[in-house]
Length: 287
Length: 268
Image (cartoon, rainbow over all chains, first blue to last red; front, side, top):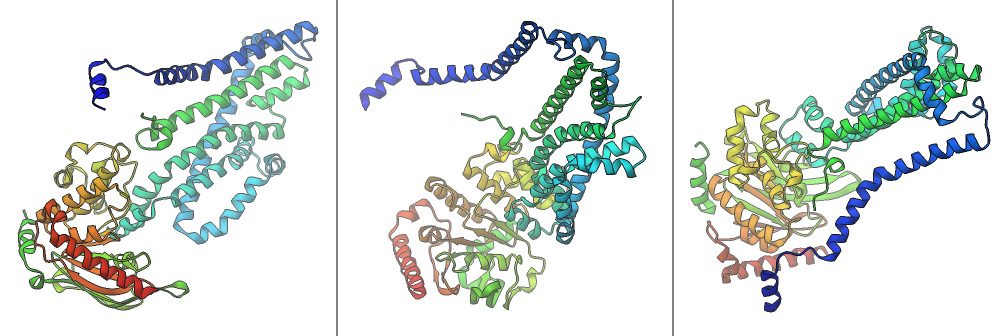
């Protein structure tokens, strides 16, 4: 024992083999987490290009990646306004989903009877495919924008509602007791206890809702069909399909996918910034 | 300041001479499905008492606390507060620190005043004073996740102290801590009590803890929950850690253990 302690005192601090390996592994993991998907992406695009070239597939059946890239530049005057329209509907629907979802869940926690009465219908609305409801909505709603908005909202609001409701009810029971002992009002309990406790749940719901709002907006536009001026990316795809302009279809499709990824990333970032001080999900692990 | 006067008085006042704070008069609490949590419990709490409720699980210790805190109401019997205490304030410390993870230590301690619509700035002095009492004055801006288990519990105690409560209800507050931390907090709690002299009801299932801390031990029996026996620990405060190793301490622990055994024997 004494020998060992003497030894450790005199010798400089040496990181042992195991720890060094762990550090190396951590670095490899970090690089790999973005390098691997990038390699897969490049390989896939290359493979796509080769298939088109090797099999001499005509571009009106499967355009090569180079052509699609060209279409972005050529058709940008068509694609960009369509993207703006789709984004508008997506974000408006998301905003209404947040307001409606949070508002309804707050109402639910204030009155159990409201929750009992309405929650089953929220579920019904959620499990019914939006494509099945959309045609009816477009019959009864004159404004095309409003119709699209309703469709996107129907898809997007449920995760916000169910997650926020769960969050509002998940506040610590002892803290609730404490609030009672200190004579907190309903409003104080909601404001200082339930809403902060629900924040991580709400943000989880919001991330799902962001993607769903985009899907809702696209699906609804497919159903709505005819557009002309002021129509979004889904209509661009439809129209390009009628003209057998497969290249533009691909360009619009990629634009939709990229938009979805960006929405998810932005919402994740917002979530991280709001929770980084206190919530386990956002706190960096300390060793 | 204003809390200094009663402190010196109550700490020095012998047990029998303390003014009455509250009285539980033959209280019974029956929960739904006929679970008798508490049957016929009577207890007089005096200003400055440190009472431990000691007993096996299911003996109604926590129910008694919740009754005093007015979170539930007795089925029969009543709790009478003394005339001078009609504006009584209650604080609770739970087994878990029960902090709001999204708020800093300072903001957590602020909670009772925040709910009384006082701004952080207007009560910052009191917040810092409470943090100083539990030696956390340098952690005002820290978040609970950055603290150790013992520090979280001290934050919880600071939050309970800030209102200068007439009575502090502690529901197995140190049960989840390791022994080193528990001993330290036992010691700190006694020092705090000396300083501010509040009345404490302390629920525990540790004989050693109850003997070290309290001047009255109420041993309770289970099914139905009831008071089995009351013991008095005559050892004066302040009690140093040497009390833990003294012969009196061992003797008190033996008496308390025997009483607890009897209480548990009665159940079976």
